[in-house]
Image (cartoon, rainbow, N blue to C red; front, top):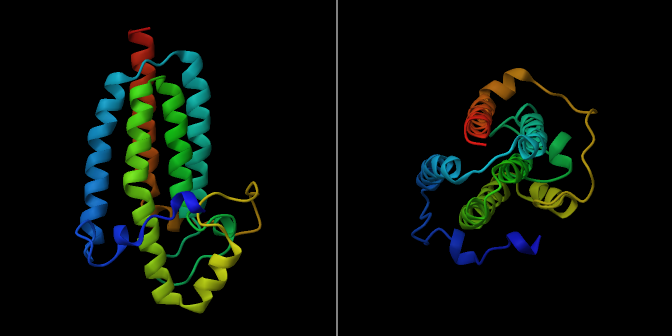
Length: 197
């Protein structure tokens, strides 16, 4: 999708943001996300009604991410089935749905603005970088897959079933960390809604 087609200098090898150091980008993104999560909890003004709606939407995102993590065999084969038949980046798409749910629960324009900036500052570059790696590793197979499946926004609603899910893969891909983080934020929002209505 054009929205996620960033200028090539953002993910070119010579760009100082990446310069072949994906780990630094990933660590920076996670560190900043942790810092922003604390700020998010500070500005959030949750009500019980908004919490129910927002956390339900966030839960859908968690399921999307979990389905992708339980299907993905990293660095062994190109995943093109299951959630990967609908979007080439279901983990990131699930993260966006989780973020949208948490923003609804928080009821804060400041938090919304910060999340939008964060998303567009990191995700297009990360997605583009991953696609370069996948194309280099799988060649024509990835090109055929990319021609068939959209980069980010699914063209149709994913249907559960018809693919394998493995709890072992889910654990190995570290998806439990996402669940724990989501539950911690949910608990903090619920506490804030109850103590400071």
